[in-house]
Structure formats: C-alpha cells, structure tokens
Picture 1: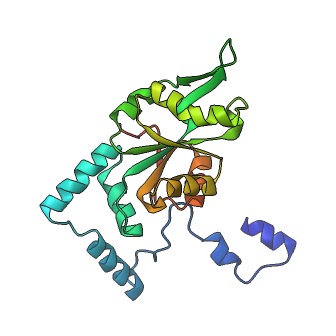
Picture 2 (picture 1 turned 180 degrees about the vertical axis):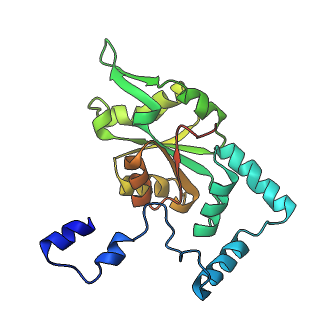
Length: 212
C-alpha cells in the first residue's frame, strides 16, 4: 500500500499514521511501551479489571452462564455501558426456516440445534424478523407469528421485531421497555457484528460459541 502512494508521486502527510492505524477489535489504547501514556493505560486497565468481591463475582458468573456468554464478556459490557446484560436478540434467519405449507399456512422449522440452544437460554429472548427472509405475510399473519414461533421454541420468545437494521432492533427493545444496553446480539459473521454495532448493543455473540 505504501508503494502505491509512492508510485502516485503524492504522499499524504498522514499516510504513515493511516498505514499503522489499529485493526478491528483494537480499543485505541496506546502501545505497550515504557512511556507515561502506556503506564497510565496499564494502571487504568488493571483497576478496571480488579477482581470484585467473591459474592459479586459469583453473581456475575451465574448471570453469564444463564445468558450463554463468558464472564469477561458480561463484565466488559458492564464496564462499557454500566448496564447489566439480560436479553438476547436472535435474527430469524439464524433461528428458523419459514415457509408456506400445502394450504398456504405459515410453517416455522427451527434450524438444527438452535431449538436446543434456546431451551438452555435463561434470559429474555427477542427475534428480529427480516422481511425479506419470510414469505410475504399479511398484517394478520405477522400478528400471529409470535404464537407460531413459541410453538417451535417452547414459549421462550418474548417478542418479534420486523426489519433488518439497527433501528429495527432499537424499536423492538424500546417497545418492550428494555434499554438497548441490556441486550446483546447472537449472530454469525461480520454482517451481524455490524448490525449489532448499528443498534448500539454492547456485545455480539457468535452463535457457534453461544451457550457452549
């Protein structure tokens, strides 16, 4: 990339900084050297991750287990937003296949192993229904869709939101009196990670490691 800038004969003043900018997942902290900034960063990090009282740690660990995430993920979300995670948002495309039956009725078929994961989940569960992922449904069919989902997932789904972007998630959570900081997205791949960030959710959990 640097060679390309040289060949063009135009070298931007900030090109070196751009080439060295942190990648995805970097929290923009200073590099770990012996500078004053690095020392302050290490001290602040150690303070933030100082072990809490045993009873507090145990409560967090139990909550993390109920939600199917790690203790570190739960604690990171708490430090970032000040909110306690308690709900998951699961895209319908990951949760189930939706099709029309022989009599044009809506049929919900849970995807392999997802029903087992949902059965183990002990938090509030919301489904984000992508309008493009389901056979064109009428308003009446959408109103009945939650009932169909709960037949497939043993009554674990609290609500369904229709859309495919961050605002759709925020609207669904707000309609159910849940701050978005208290929910995380269960997804697969960079697309769902971007979706979670667009909704302002503090965590996107990969479905392959959810409740594992």
